[in-house]
Amino acid sequence: MSTRDERTLVLLKPDTLRRRVCGEILSRFERAGLLLVDIRKTRFTRTILARHYGELKAKNPAAYKRNVPYLAGREAVALILQGPNAVAKARALAGPTDPLVATPGTIRGDFSSDSIFFADSEDRGLENLVHAADSVTSARREIRIWFP
Image (cartoon, rainbow, N blue to C red):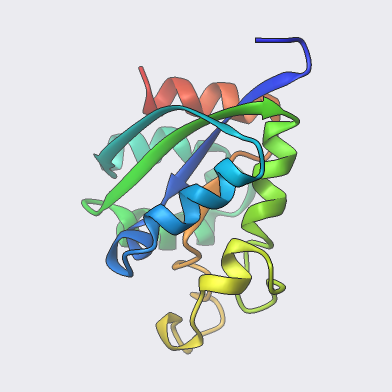
């Protein structure tokens, strides 16, 4: 791995599996020049969610309380992607966390559907298709959680 290469974690969330768009989304990351290093179909357990969203619990307890019960027990696909500026590239491809403001050309902008979101704006975004690590430090921590 060159010094400019990074590794990042991307999670294809349960709505991605339910809507059968995993392959299309993975191909976007690959076409953008990111190398698939590892892939694993997994299940969100409360233990993993507590570790993964530990920082969110401190920053935004309400979001943590919504996400953990919603995701617990559901399936996801965990990816390790590698390439130059992988963290920033994966986040740009994913688009804004709120899929209702994501622009066309991003994963959330192209694949989200207004009909899958809850009417209560507080709950909006639970089904936002993907998670992409927000920093190199977070990516390292998250990769250790999902790929021990």
